[in-house]
Length: 449
Ligand SMILES: [Zn+2]
Image (tube, rainbow, N blue to C red; front, side, top):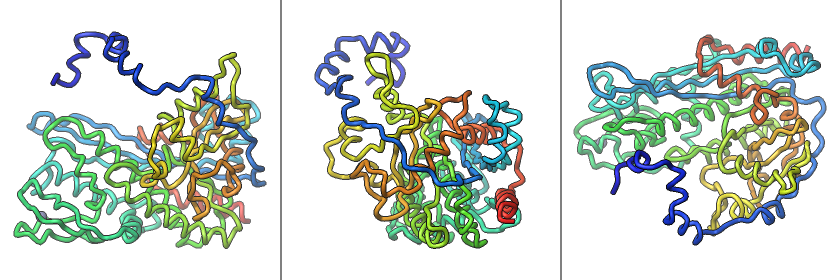
């Protein structure tokens, strides 16, 4: 077997693609011709948006970087993860909007950013009395959720939200994280720190249930996969955490004024995927309260910037005659059957994303012509389905489309301004004072008065 990357040194990738072996494989593979591509994706006009639209957008976005550190061990690395939340005041954005394109400096004034960062051990970084980098990583992940106080005036820890979600998980034992020390127990993971029953009496963390450590490499280079999972879990926990803070402060009746935007799909992949079902259950619980108080659903949107759905949207939107399949201001809600036939080929009877998604995807062409692949959550049992392309079960879809029309920037045509700037903020975590709730409170109370 060749070493990884070996061929890349011998010939350019293009020549590999053109090679007879690859071409033979492609001749045996399914091909979707351009004429069939658009047949089943029928764009529709979105339902009417709520009036007024939510005036605040809270965007959550994270990033990570793996950096080399010098500690005397070769290849030592640290993962630097940060999650930012940006509160964007749409009413103020409106004033700027009159002379588009928005000046980025003015645009920044409408944002109130806040971010939090954490350094996690990577390869060959061993803390305290741990016996491996993996165990150091496990403890650091626990510390991250334990120490993360989202708002300086609110002492609820992110860990409390994680514990609430863990309580929804059916208890099952996992392979002891100390298998590398010779422990062969299957251990239960509880909501508090416990110890493995074997003679080593090593600590087990509630966050071990995420099993991200199973993708941590002690001995070889990069841990991007593990850090990616940490980030995805952190962002989604923060969303649920903020909603629970709203609940505790009796603010759920104000949620008509707020829209939550998340970077990436409304899903959790890999070993922590079980968290997706727990997130879904908690969202449905919170939404039932919001429904009762406001008569409406919570607005939550996930934005996908890359991947197969983004590529597919681009493909079906370009007609052979050079025109575009989607008119500005139209959407398409792909069904399970469509996804399996056209996007992620599958013969399975199991629903696409059944174990990972707590929402579904839709394509939207904004009025300015930008293509957006967005996700909306399953907030009721009725919404939790990919069977139909009828938007009727999703009363906020029209509002989401109207918000997308407002938020798309000219500079980043297929991205969203708040998401983009949250990303910029996350990359430069200067704002460690965390006042998300206070900032929200100020705007919400001002509007109430
Ligand atoms: Zn053990």
